[in-house]
Image 1: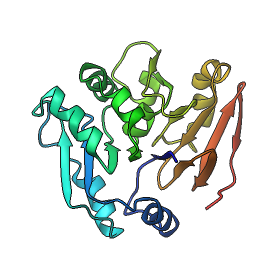
Image 2 (image 1 turned 45 degrees about the vertical axis):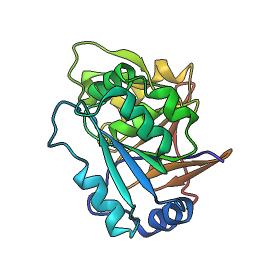
Image 3 (image 1 turned 90 degrees about the vertical axis):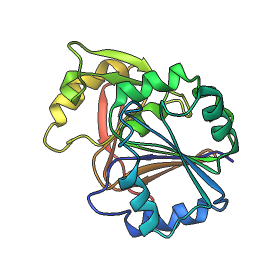
Length: 218
């Protein structure tokens, strides 16, 4: 059964309800593979994301970080053998380019691992996403990028929604005409388990240019 977590960002650690379901879902803890969002910056090692897992008492026998220090074939092998794949937060575009360069998307899609993404990682797990300077991306215009496509929807994660709802609605309305979008801020998550979608925290659903806040289910 596929299990995917699309996380926003967390001011401290995972809230109790998220910790509980993660511990239930992550049974195999042999190996976690973290995928950098800034793979040429080797100091970017996922320490924050690992601290969330440590605080939740989710620990692994082996920890691996994939960046440009790791050879492409070795990265693919690590993905193949992973118990959990964690796409780190940071730079959406650099992570997207890295996933394509290393041809990791199909390996991730074929994996039986629990797949988790935080912020940029969650965005790149989705089918497609809007890259825009209005969302903080370092670009001039706006364009749609292909993600890994673990699930057939788009994600905007870790954005100040409450103070920018009109902007978010305006920017994402065109994309929402062709694909559903889940938009979230801090301290929240969308969990996909099989065919079931669970909502943790403040998450908004945008479809056919209409936006609504979803009820939390966990």
